[in-house]
Every structure is written in C-alpha cells, then in structure tokens.
Length: 307
Image (cartoon, rainbow, N blue to C red; front, side, top):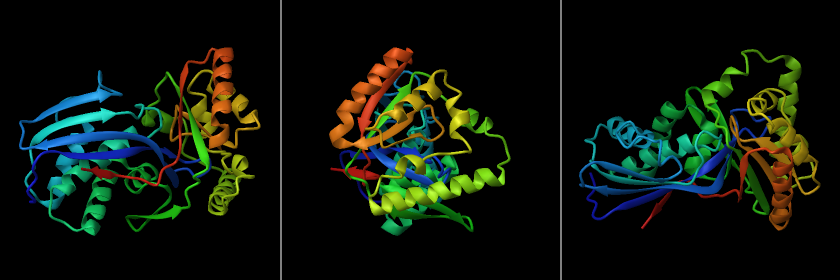
C-alpha cells in the first residue's frame, strides 16, 4: 500500500451512449462531472450532495463504495477505510451514465491507493467496472474521455478513440420521468430483422466517417436508428413529439436518445447553442413537456485525479 496523507479527490464525466445506430458500441464523455473526496483513515461515513442526495444510500450499499471495495478484493489487498464525500451533478436514471461514473470513481479511487502500474490500474478498473455496469459504451468514455468505439472480443473490451468535435455543443433535454435501464431493455424484444441490422450498420459507419472527418453534413442521418430509439422514446409521454420538433430546427445538427433514455441529446455549434436552447424552451412550454435543459459539450477528460 502507498502512504496517503490528507485527502484524495477524483472526478468522472457523464456519458452519452449509442449515438442512435451505434447501439452498445459508441459512447462519448460529456463535460458534467461527479466528484468524490476521500479521507483515508477516518471512520467510515458517506456524505452526498447534489443529484441523489435524498435517495442514494449512505452505507456500503452505495454503488461507488461497492466498486471501491470490489477493486481491493480484485488486487487481493486489504480495504482502506475512510470517509467519502460525493458530489453528484449527473442526473440519475436518465441515460447519462450516472451509474458508470459512480463505479469508475469508486474503482479508480481504490486503485490509486494500491501500488500498481498505470497499465495494471487501467486493466483492473475496467474489469471491475464492466462487472458492475456491463455496458462498455458508458464505462470506457467515462474512464478515458472522448468519443469511443467499443469492441468486445474474446472476453476483452477494446476501445478506439475518435477525434473530439470541439466546435459542437450538446443540448440535453432531461425529462422529469426516470427510465431504468432494465425497463428500457425490456421494451426492445429479442430479435432484429436483416433490414434493421443493415440500416443501423450503414448509419453507424456514417457516424464514424462524420466524426473522423469533422464533417457534420450527414450527422443527422448518421444518428437515425431502427432498433431502440423509437421504442424507448415512447416510454415518456410527449418525448417522441418533442424529439421530432427539435430535429426540424435548422440549427439542430443532429439528435439522439442518450443511452437508454429518458434524456434526449442534440448537437449544434457552440455559437448557435443559445438560440437553439431558447427555441427548445419554447417547444417545452408549447407541448407542456416537463424537462430541464442542460447545455454542455464533449470532453477528452475521463477520470481526473485532483490535488
């Protein structure tokens, strides 16, 4: 074990997965960050501020703590007890990777307390995180940052980074209604026909081309989907209508259901984000659709250790 004095602070980003057709294969990090401050050697305690402060457990059943302890067991090391202060900014159960952030924070914190190489830390954190989360398109961009292609092969997840579209802003429309990943998976069914598969393969390829070339002319079409978005949008009354109206605006470059929902995400240029935000607010009022707007952007920063 390494000797730690004082406290340790880590932060991890929100994530948005799928990008329409890239179901369980594509994910990106967003510049909304959850944070944990850890005081080793203190009596065990958990304080939570922000999102989930009234609902998340302050016991060892907290997901962050469970991932923290699981990582020590993975290394075969004794668990370091201490006090946790958790600051949450990522909306819960809205398809923005709040669970992935908690898991990555807990596991990364544990790994930082153990003498290991960066390569060992990367391997163990991702191994533990994927055991909890199961979705690499959230875990990988949360840990590494950026926009990632995630490929599972022979029991291992490989990731490939795409260039960051730094000129884009992301407008998040976060409905009041939560959608659990389990419920969002259940509505999909178990079969995909060949036409649906081809449709999504074509568009996920087009997405990679668009981001790689920094050419967004085809990005709206690249994020069309035939497998999950329509079914999941229908779980929230008013969401399909808002989504359709939002995509019509000329300043809206593209739109997608973030992860399994309920959040809808839209891309525009940073220069146009204010005008599009005002337009979205008008649609929300017109449709009487209960949601909050968050303006953010993609980030290359995954897990961050602060002084």
